[in-house]
Length: 265
Image 1 (tube, helix red, strand yellow):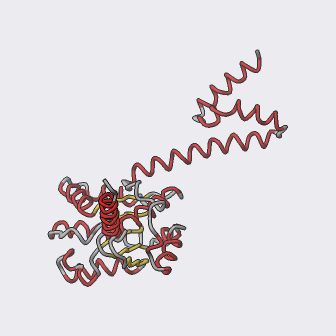
Image 2 (cartoon, rainbow, N blue to C red):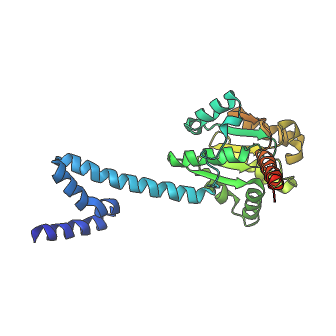
Image 3 (cartoon, rainbow, N blue to C red):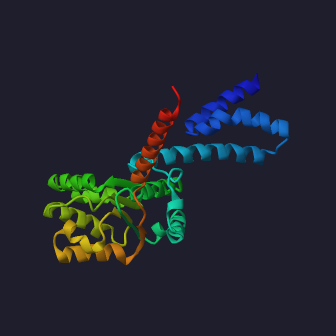
């Protein structure tokens, strides 16, 4: 009777203390400890590890939801065998995440379909799982959010919100041909994060063509200078992965058609 009463009270206390992992498993762990003749410190450590694991998993899920990262683009589906050894080495180092502590930027250039967005989305997920905060957005959407915040006189507040993230991923900066107002808010964001937080950018345009984005030569030079000063630059000079997939599918369909025609009727 007393054991039952104690178990109920322990469960109540763990609920009050907001320790759901320990509440769910303390009885099972107690039985395992008795069976294995573990000491009280081992039992306590195992309980705490259950609680820590659950909290960490929930924290990762929460940060992934707030990040906006496309979760289908992970390293499980990223084809590193298509890349030069130097690029693979760069990616391996970046996955450690220490560049965030140095407030370094990551700039990824390549043709459409080469895997730029996939790479930064996968890297972003790795960083989140390591306890970092990452924000991911297409350039067009981010610029519109910045413009809306400026129009509503809350641009400083929005920039402060982004400043809380260890890395801001700006995807496909080369596709959007900004007008002057859009260019100004984008430049403001880059200036605000300079040496304060990492920016991760994908672009199909080399720096020599960035005047099409920022319109003004001096603004273009200033933006590039801020991004390059502390940065890792990756060039993915490989054929379009989407094109390769389409060609493989087309060849497979053609083979199946030939095989069907060769079967005697």
